[in-house]
Length: 322
Image (tube, rainbow, N blue to C red; front, side):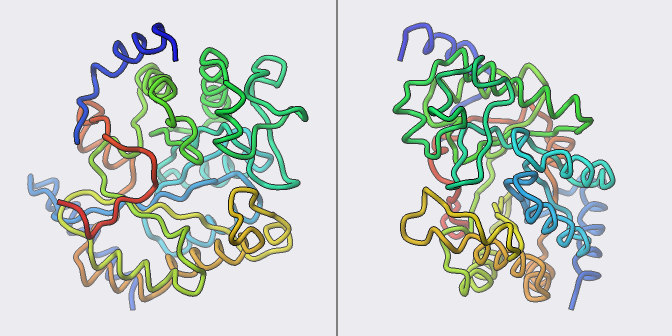
């Protein structure tokens, strides 16, 4: 950690104040809440669904198409370095109602399915392993002592690729949380968000939860439990969709020693849970309005962002919210 790195962060984060049956029913609730908002009455419960890793593989993109068929509002976080990025762009270009984020990527976590930097391995050599791909884990990334200027070059290259492809980017977030794993890295992300006029996921006071740690057979139960625990305010559900296809089944997660071979089962279970009638009923019964990050930014504005005290986990259980 250099003195220069810390002073850059101080300059950057001054704008962020640190702080400790029934699709029809859901659609009707969304329109009612939107009408209330236009009349000056803020809805009591809002939920963001954020689908991570879009563009990572064809199976993930197929799952996004399936979620689209439900008509539920949601946001997606797209991985610009990945092989199926352009297919994701094609899907999103045809569906402008989806909130679009850029899933800033500094890791490539599968055993034989890999990607490397958009800027090129020779341009950012401290960010890649001996094969020229991103490191599999955050620990591997940190152990290589990555150069901050190379991180900035790569993350901006990802942003520029997304914009050049025609994506309307609303917000940034962070694959495996690596891009915000130190104060200096987090400073770079905040600087880029300000430079390009993007929002930042988790900077709008969202109470968040992820289903990834739940066994596949308990994903739906966990989702319903979390949904029924949503309190007034803004909540975030982070999901990792996919389909149990040969492509996804072939992937082995190098960061999950306890269950590395069932990524396809986990992702299919999350897709099944979020597209289930039970989830839609829970939303309707709780009077929960689904919103996208585009909606949140339009209603609150970028000046409403405040830096969260902790970004080390995807989850801060809804039930524990103040």
